[in-house]
Length: 416
Ligand code: HEM
Image (tube, rainbow, N blue to C red):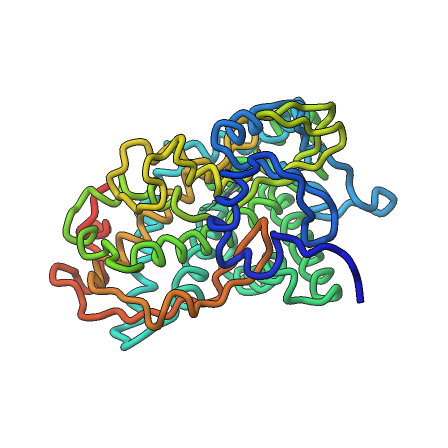
């Protein structure tokens, strides 16, 4: 028997983070709680405070490799383990490749990936969105964007799947997945040196060569390996959560399918509504930091509650109503803010827009196959996972072509 206090971030928190965090936001907006690992965390829950904290250099992300004694391996460090100026120095290699203008060039391929996967599903009576669509879609897009060779994709997918769901795997499986990722990234770096590829991986390698030693090879390996993880499961989960939001009671799917143009605006509201990441990465206070009326001591470990900020009535009127035309929905913090703002935000937006557009166009009568409160959630308080989202497609949409796309390859029914 242990007398360790029960963490409010454990148990069914993954199924109802918004509800749990609203309690803190309204009664104790800077709260010291126990994390599931038994360590203390400061929760910041009001929008204004979360926004300021993302921009506060006194809240540091800097950490050291866990085992500096052994040779470097992919993922020993990641971009969210550095503060400026090191963070700026490394992020600079990848930022141009992820700029919205560059990412827009992948639109046709992303739309084709969504259309082909839906086409392969045929006309099922029911299907499971996460395994049968969201996961293969997100991984395929990532492989296209990084130009992963076709023959490497299956084994890489298996390794990445282990690493994004670590709780379900033992230490040996995790070790072997990191080894695989490490070998893949190093082999591909060697293959792309001096090349002219326009994909994101090659562009980053070229930027590294041009940086002439200001970024180490270890930092490059970590950066590229991180893209494969950060770019995969967040999008899978977000897609599931968007569909779930749309299919909730009196869900507005039919309206979205019928009103071209609404989806582009509605996406920010869907991103505000729910997120796989209720919290930021943990920050550490470098000195005493006053937030609201509270003082976080030097060394205090801080979680910025994005999910609470996104539903703060001080910023989003009537926050618990899903309003696809909400004027200021884009103020959400689902992609973070400041120096660590999500590098892949433009890509994630493109994927979500194309995937949701293709789904709703093909099946405007899409419905949950079972009650929403019967869904199973897993993962942890910083990365929640929807285990499965069973759906019933209903009759096919009237205007779709054979593969859910118009002749020019764009998804019909939804403009961007
Ligand atoms: C809907 C999907 C996604 C969500 C909700 C999401 C969310 C976030 C958030 C909140 C952060 C900031 C973390 C912090 O400051 O503590 C972040 C950082 C990051 N994300 Fe995403 N992300 C998504 C998709 C992607 C994709 C598709 C990629 C790349 C292909 C990506 C790559 C990154 C990277 C590299 C960082 C670290 C940036 C830095 O530290 O400078 N993310 N993401």
